[in-house]
Length: 515
Length: 113
Image 1 (tube, each protein chain N blue to C red):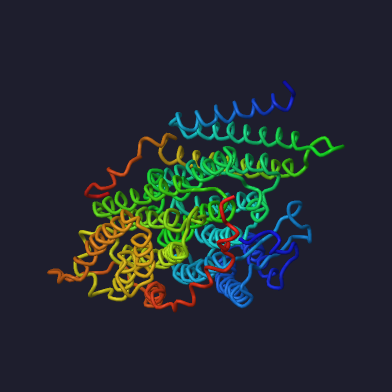
Image 2 (cartoon, rainbow over the protein chains, first blue to last red):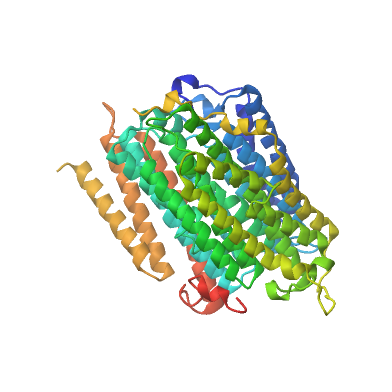
């Protein structure tokens, strides 16, 4: 974010939209809880497209003005008050949240329906309420302007996500939810400790003010280390990934999609905020290489374990562990401060920035589609053992096609969003002389191809025995999943101009010059 | 040693004890208690910082106090959610340990996952 002088302490014209994006879901949660029963579903279904529209309006506003949209709550300027801000990155993430959450809501309708005239059941009420709550918490994370607001938003996100894991109440999912919660609480208390240290050292938690005050002294490093470690536990970066596969695989399909596509991105987004916006003055070469190395290990381990899974949902969950790894290449490849940077190296760091963020968005869309496709397959066949998928591609072509399109994005096959993201990261790695990341990206792509084809191979094979579906699959749900998978594909066709949105609010080179 | 330093050191000791408990104890209930200890240490540290940053004429910086109150509410809700999950786990399995089910990644790779 730019220098404090560049941003006034007043709300901008589009700032009120940010409050709408956060307050609407909170009102929605209260309404859904108060009205209960079928109304919870109606509230959620009405709210998701509304939030999408609000996110689109915010993105349009940021795009048009080319500046950060800001809302100062109650007119109290930071450091006394609290500000909400939307830069290009937040706007893009809010838009992604809107699209994915709307698709998930449409997909989940039959699975979490309350029969007309039937009584209220716990599953649907909890699911729809939590769906709204997670969207609200995510919007608060994208737009939060100070570190303590972000802490509260992070905790709200955890409280919304954990019960989704054990929605069906089986003992193993309860255990998975408990393990997830313990990891998440550990992570958030470390984040809070780092926040406390920062407040003690600099007397403010506002991101823009902090960016100007943070110096490269030991206390900043301690705070950065505590907060990063906490957020990594929540993002499930290797080796803190143990909670993720059972939790994401155990949740109902719509819940898995929400968790894998959006929830893990919330804490990753905060790592980006921390290193690029809160502490632009901290030289980070060593830390960035460590984060990149952890990401590389995540790609290799996650992909190899995905290859070894017998169940589809676990395979997709391990692939999430692997795809999270790519995101962390952002730190070594898009360093924010160059001690002796030439213009060319700086241009490449911009390429890596776009690639990393595009990976975050395209993984969200593709993974949601894949988890929902897996859910449809599981419902239709009554199991999700990959060995039993022979010939299912003939019976459910739309679902398997959606899975394949999502898989293309994971592998990085052109023309998908994942391809563009990985290609940008790859070229940046080679151009910056950090070729070892490029090698890992290529190996990760091959391994991803391996585990996606492990599913597609039997699915498209000719089966001897005709497949009998246990339950009919609604065409409408298949269409929703396919539409989302096509979105993941279309991300690859985004014009280059769209990447300028992600640059809005980035600090200029002069502003992050080493102090 | 001033009172502020003493409080700060106590907070640091609580954080240390809590971290030890969260990492070492396998039982979820003990982990939850250790998490609360850890949280208490962080809040005490925040209080000490508020005291240190007091402006002229004021007893303490009020901003951290407001944050501590919010933090306590959040920690309380987290504990409630965690205890509820432990109770559900106990009802479902008759035990509340996380070690009985596959804690690592390998067992999931079995023929039936």
